[in-house]
Amino acid sequence: LQFTMKKIIAAITLMLAFSINANAQDKGTSSAYNLGKKQAVELAEYLGLDSVKTEDFARLFEQKISVLDNANLTQERKDEFSRVIEAKIRASLDAHEMEKLEQNTALFKKLTH
Figure 1 (tube, helix red, strand yellow):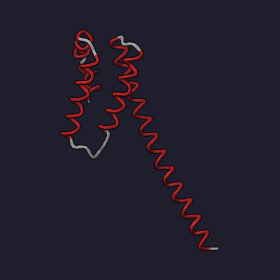
Figure 2 (figure 1 turned 30 degrees about the vertical axis):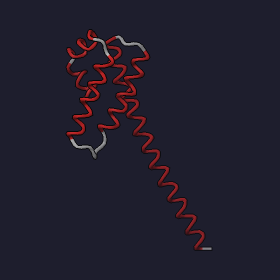
Figure 3 (figure 1 turned 60 degrees about the vertical axis):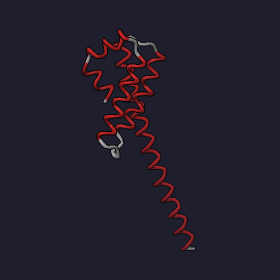
């Protein structure tokens, strides 16, 4: 009977540990999404973008935040990823929008790094 109780307690402990870990990962994803959405809205308000482009940028910025928060990446990899994000922003905006964004260096840097 004691042996069985120990197994049950061990199983419950493991289950709790995994659920806490999964919950922490969900919060990390959620905060990356929320921050990405906030940055996308800031960009959309500054440039007057429609809701479709805003959602596209929210997903892009969520991905950027998730990747750049990875402590295992070298600074070189993070810099390269920032260049990729910048290229995607440039590909998504027309020349006038991009020119206006480049004039706001603080916002441009926040969105690409």
